[in-house]
Amino acid sequence: MTLRAKPVVKRRSSMDSSDRRHLLTNLGFGLVVVAAVVILVGTAVASWYGDHLATVGSVNGTTITVDQLRARAAIESFRVEYQASRLSTELSAGRLTQAEYDQGKAQIDQRRQQIGIIALERLIDIIIIEDLAAQEGVTVSDADVDARLLKEKTLVHTRQAWLIEVEPAVDPGASEPTTEQIAAARAKAAAALAELKAGKAWEDVARSTSTAASAPQAGDLGWIAQDELGLDERVATAMFAIEANVPSDVIEGTDGSFYVVRVTQINPGSVDGTFDGRLQEAEVTADDYRAAVRLDELRQKLEDKIVADALKPGPQRRIAEIFLRAESTAPTAEAIKVRHILYSPKDDPGGAGTLPETDPAWEAARVEAQATYDKLVADRNQFDAIARAESDENSARQTGGKLPYFDAASAVDPDFLAAISTPGLKAGDLIKPFKSAFGYHVVQVMRRPPDIDWARDLKARIDAGGNFVALVRDNSDGPESDKGGDAGWVAKGELDDLSEQAIFGTEIGKVTDPVDITGSGIFLYKVVAEEVRAPSPEQDATIRSTAYGDWYQAKKNDPSLYTIVRDQGSTTGIG
Image (tube, rainbow, N blue to C red; front, side, top):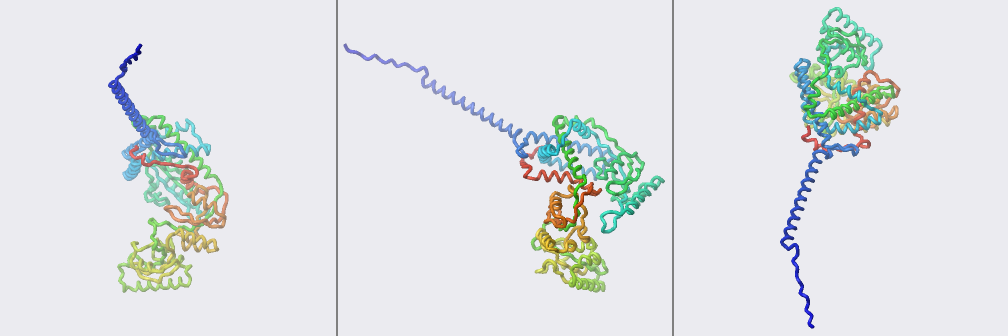
């Protein structure tokens, strides 16, 4: 029997190759669509993140986002525009002069251009202030915020104010008036008030009596707001308590002067009913604005505490200083600083240029210069005293003849420049008398740059026993250079942070290392004595105006306390 293999029946697949291709094609297309959607969504998310949550800055790792920056910029923009509106209103009402308006508008225009930068800095400050306030135990309540918000909405109470000031005289070389000088100032102010009550015109009394800078304008201060006075606190209080056209009693200011004040017009404050509407038009939410006001109030309370602490009686140090004033433009390597004594024909530098050379006054000036040169060759320590007493240059009587740095590009008399440019001149050298268009000069070389090297050399000489008073006289650009550099008592919070650290960190009787203050110059402070003292009126005013700012900036700029990152490019177009 022959067995045959069973034929194999080939079955057709349920999905032939054509169907498979269609399926794979559809699957591929679907995946492409999904991928495209994912990319689009990812791009949208990335774009949204960049527009809203991207970091534009940080403080110690606490980030500031684009959304936060925009919200703060909106608040800053609102405040700028609201201020601009008020400025226009005050001009229209005649309470601002055109010059005052133009000055205010220029400041507003500048702020408009910097809204993004201002907003970012405000957000950085918020983080730091919250941290510092917590350290100092400073908090604000809802009532505090309500009060500050109401103040912002209130149109300012302003008054057209006038002032007569009588400042006590002070003897040359003294830092404070005597009891008799204080009594004389008080009596003079009382006499002025008596004249006013007797019917004498305010303008006449003010011009003849007042020692204030406003005296030529009869003491007219213009329209002022109480918190913008910049005046003595007692004067400000009186100014906003008296009736119109009624002079005040004599006021003894905390600054030691005596005052009589009056107001001629009063513009009472009132709540601005348009404030909330303007806020809404600016697309600033009430919650956002209230949060900004809360932080403003926190900063103010922090400032109040720091200032109050600084005003308490505490250690003060009496100092004397050598001050090397910074030039507006850094001197070149070949520059030279000199002091001079000028002898002009007929003691008239301005007329020397038109005086014939044959006039005997020229020879007389030369003889004077030669005689002084001969004296100085014998004793150069006389230079400062002779310059203050004899020089025909007016400023020399205050400076001892000290001049700024000169180099080949300096705009100065060519004969003078040629004489001080003689090769080989060094500190201390005397230059023989020479003639310029202004007269005959006796010149001594003071130093070459840089000043920091000279300051270090001065300290070394003082530490080695050098005469501090003589070195002050011959080197310092300070106003008390002829009086040993006496700068009086210094309280903490009164000076910049660098100076304060040097002064209070140096042993009594010693001189600090050079303190280089950008834009001002280099200081060497001699610490003369220390006492526990209450601030004087002058110190009080200085501390109130500078203590918080100096304290806060020192904290903010200390990298050991705060690591601050700013993306300034992110502020472009913000606002």
